[in-house]
Image (cartoon, rainbow, N blue to C red; front, top):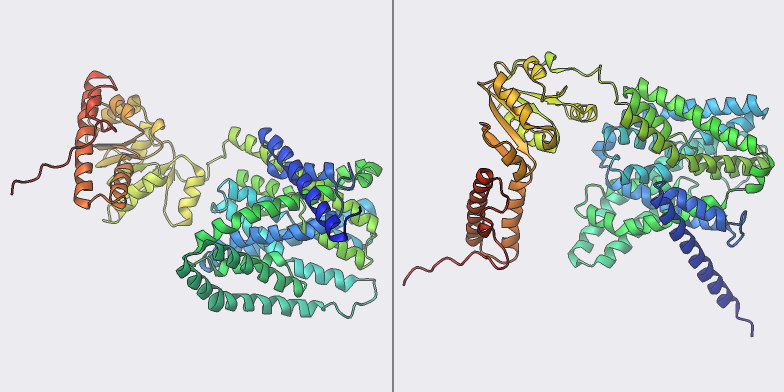
Length: 596
């Protein structure tokens, strides 16, 4: 007996869903194991099961249309991390570097296509401008997963990508203006699209301020996680649907909704609730990208497809690196940015379709360049592995960074300005104590300068550099860098050269405390000791122990730990006075009660 139509549709959906998830699971696991990243695994999985290879699944366009919600969710999550004041701070990169990148790369690629392939000027522009865009769906997850999105170089990359999303509307307008097809009376004009863009952005800002934020405050009172998930997805999909209905970028709408909620107290809960949907749908998007690879177009003219892909990557990498260098990025970081954004992006698929509908290019050309776009996206994980390998082995020159010879005379030298050194130095500066800060990481120095703190470049454990920084007249030297960089020999050299200085050191653990025993360190602080003790005390209080008793436990722990450390230092045996440590069988007895 033949099943009904709904049953057949359900059966097909279940089969296709299981096949896609199974292929993704296998290839993503394999590519992760090989160190090639999840994105490439999804694309390869889609290419193999797609209509142009094994033909197990068709309708890649429909799958991509649904999975583009994943890009909207990605931009929503990015928006949650960027409050309006931070966006204002990035305006130079967004409307300066971003604008130049889109114009220069788009026009350069249009010229390449015009003279290399002999296309008309209209066709060259309709293809070249989309190729100048990069893959938001590929680059942003890479930046977020590596923690670089909040770093200055990650912010530069994000700023360029954001302007690229904004530029889609002008590109659609340009393609529509050059169209050779009969005018569609239902399609809005370029001027109307511009008005729609401004109106939609203003409308979303107002909705976010006067509807979304109060809505999430109301939901927060109920404490229902399901409502947060529903409300978060509603904010993303409704803003994306509004922009789509106006023929605008759905991702841009979702991004604005995220920015409007960036200062909400429920931002972190929203982020954790939406993240799983983003991961699944973005993976589905890359599956559909792989399914769209036209192997017939590649096989028919392989040298042309691969040559175009290489040409696009080289042109964009060189131009973006050059523009980044002009905007003040160091050489290594400029090369990193150029390679990071050298691929063509997912919006190329959409804009090529528009150009074909406008009769500016043939459907065959749209298919050919879609294959080229996909190949450039496939190359990105490999390119990033190459550039990271090169940058690790060729340290970025720091010749343009000021050394401590340029520092004014100060009372205290702080070596290392990471999370530990920042706290120490800022507490000293709170009492107007002059401080010279030294760090050996150019990236840390650049980041500090973003916040107005002058940090000098150099290895602060070298005696000659410390003398240059004014150690002969300083009152204190505080070693706050990674503890493993500090050895007993280096400290002894400092004591011998600058006997008047109070030397203080951050150490890794009690083993390093023992290593430095006998040295007259004014302060020898284990890097996690104090925070661990504070957390232990707070945990006792949160678990119902009275504050007075929790403080007694802290005092007793500190006393016993000091006794053990002294014994271990004298004997060199880590097991010395082990019986003084607390354990399940060695608890702290309750205080004896006073007699009535």
